[in-house]
Every structure is written in structure tokens, then in C-alpha cells.
Length: 318
Length: 238
Image (spheres, rainbow over the protein chains, first blue to last red):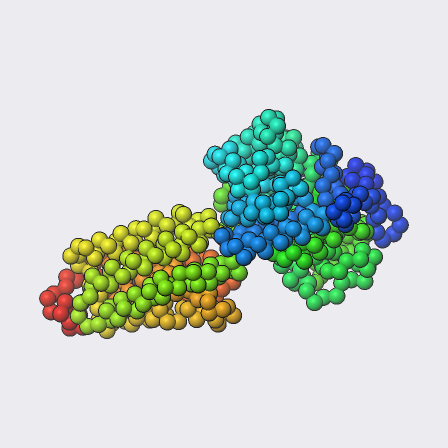
């Protein structure tokens, strides 16, 4: 592992303009160049983050589907998931992430995309999760989503990496896929992930990160920034346990400047204010929470000092 | 690179308790006639199994075969498999259990149900009674609607639990063949329920342990090894 200096990296984030117009002014907050709002659909102004490999921008908060979208053939729950997707899209969201590992989540996303006619709106993000035939699995995934082509496919938890990563690169070279990535979670397999990030031309990497699980700040996030790899954040709420533990606790006084209404929003602002982070993907079963999460990608973001304060406060409370 | 063994138990559970218990609500309301019939089948089978004398043996086995078939097809395949990728790997076990019950019903094998009055019989009775009568109300205690009740003959957990009880109420060497599938299901289900924070996980695990213990006791006492005499066939408590 190199002796990349975290403090040096964070100071160098004056170069964050390369990541979508982040600037640092004043003492407490970041002010950002907002994306033009879509006047036709009257969407709120959402912070956009840049995908380094292409310069494309995407909204700074996405939607995960782990557990929340695995509702099987329950039509009532499928409609609720479609409502979540609707609220997410109306609030300016685009990236939805899933995996073959997530049971019926892919089918439910396909159901929602059909119901909403949102196939062109979504930034479709899924995974290949097999040590067997990755191509067949990807085909099945595509049929479940009812999309012709994915924006991003990732090797899930590095399973079958030696076969599946070359497969994804072949698909990308053939124009069948726009972006290639890999994922891990819970901080597992860090050494393997670092090796892949250093040796492969990845567009995305997905890791676990939140104000309590901060290990990635030491090396992985700076490495991703250095290598021009976009970063998706899973478990931003630790599977839901962070907001649950913080419920009832008053928001810290300094958070007033950020205009947050909940701990969930504060956590998301903490995450997306990191210059290496592209898009956390919180999961939810409630349309109101989807809108609340997207609202975190608007307005002011904390600077480095406030980020440390946020992590300190949450670390004490949980 | 290490792969599958990186996953913990919690990583493999990919559905919420909310979604899981709605499966029973939908099944109970959609298939209420079949669900009630399966429960009644269990009650009839238990009545026959608790009688002195080994009459009704074939009826018990046929009823158990039918409820396992319904449980496997109705619950596991139709409702549970869409949210749990592991179910298709477990379904062959249910199919095997159905085949075993059917074979025992069709062939004159030394397997007989009947009240013996020993410790193992009492445990068997307790498990059958819990599966038929108490299990449906476990959900109420945990704050769920009665419509989400898990019923013997349709839901896998009480069916497996009750089957362990039925097996303990039987005697004969061949009863061993009927234990692995329900034991395995109880272990897997205990893990699932534990990750979902459901207290009934401990009941499933306790049932496994007590069944294994009783099996060992019965082996020592000759319940599963001693040949049945004509007198014992007429009155198993003799």
C-alpha cells in the first residue's frame, strides 16, 4: 500500500472543480454550481457529480434496491416500489442500482420502469454475480429490467472477477455497455479491490462508506480520485440502522447552515461532500424518504471542518 | 481471491420481515380453502397418531405426503422462491419427503404410528400440538395480523416442526428416513428467523435438538430397532 497522504489529498481538493463544480468559500459550507433545473418537468436543482472517465454528470444521490425492492409477486408492494421510483425520478434522481443477488428486485425495477415509462430517464446500474456464465446472467438481468443496454455493470463483491471483468470490458468495447465497475461492501476484500483499481481501467467502484464506517477515507477514496474512478457508496445508512439509532436526537446546531431536516440528509450531505464520492445509493420503501434523500443533493454541503464535526457527533451518538 | 465464504448469514438474507410475513397473508387469503383443508388434514393425522393401536397408519402417511406436496408447491415454489434464491435448491428435499411418505404408505414397511407413553412420545405430542395449535398465534405475540398466521400443512415451518413430532410418535427402523429433511429445514429456518430477529427461531432450533435427543433415547430403548410383535401392533403401550 502506498503512503498516500489523506491530509494532502483533502487539501488538494481545490481541484474538485474537476468533480462537478465544487468550490470552497467561507468558513462553514460549500457552495456549488447547481445543475440547470429542468423547467419542463420543474425538477429541483440537484447537485451533479462528474463521472471522471467521460465527463458525464449524474445526480449526486441514487437509489439502492437491496432488500427494499425484493417484494416478489406481491402486486401491492410492487406498486409501492413504483411509487418510490416515481418520487425518486420526480426529485431529480437517475441512478438505480441492483443485483441478481437481490431476489426479485430486478423484476420489480423493471415493473416500475414499465409503469412509469422511465427507461430513458434511469441511469441503469446492475451487477454480475456469478462464478459461472456471466453473459447469461447479464442477459437475464437485462430482460428483468426490460432495458436493452445498461449504463453501468459491476462485478458484485469481486465474485468471478477473473472471468467477469474481462467480459464487461469486452461488452464495453463492443458498445453494449457504457461503464464498467466493481463492488465490495462492509469493507471486505480491500487488498483485492486496491489491486483491481490499480491494474484495471475501471469507470466505477462501489464501496461501503458512512460517518461511522470511514476506513475508505484513508486510502480507497483518494486512490479512486487519483485514478479517475467514480465512486458509488453502498450502505450509506448502515442498512438503515444509523437513522434508527439517531431518531429522536436533535440535529447539531452547526447543521442549520446546511438546511437539513433529518439525520439521513445530514449523512448524505456528509458523503456527497467528499470530492471522490460520486453517488451514494440509499434504499427505501417510502416515497417521502426517496424525496428527502434527493433533497440532500441540493443546497449547501459541509466543508472539511464540518465533515469532521458531523462524523464526531454521529460517532458519539451511535 | 476468496469468494463465497466472505458472506455472513445476514448477507444472505435479502428480504424484509414485512415482505416475508405478507407471503402468508396472501397465501392464506387467496387459498383459504386449501390452507384450512391442510390444517384439518394435520388434525386428523394427529388424532390417528395418538391412538392406541396402529390403525390409520396409511392414512397418516398419505395426509403427510399431501401436506408436504402442497407446502412445497404452494408456499415454497409459488410464494417464497421469488424472494429467496435458495428455495429452488431446497425444493428437491420437499419432493423427496413426499416420495418417502408415499413409499411408506404404499409398502408394508415396519413403520407404525401410535401412542407409546414414553418420553419421546410426549415430546412428539408437544411438537405436533405446538405446530397445529400454537404456531399460528406466534405472529400475534410478535405484533402481526392473524391473517399472517403460519399454519401447519401450508407454511413450511410448522409443517416441518409438526412432522418431527409425528416421526417421534412412530416406531420402526425406517422412521430415520423421515427425519433429515424436516430437521434440515428447521435448522435453515432458524437461521433465517434469527437474522430477521424473530424469537420463534429458538423454538425451531430447540425442536431440532430435542428430536435428535429423543432419537438417541429411542435407539437405546429399542423403539427404532426392536421388531414389532403382533401384541405391540395391537397395543403399542404393552
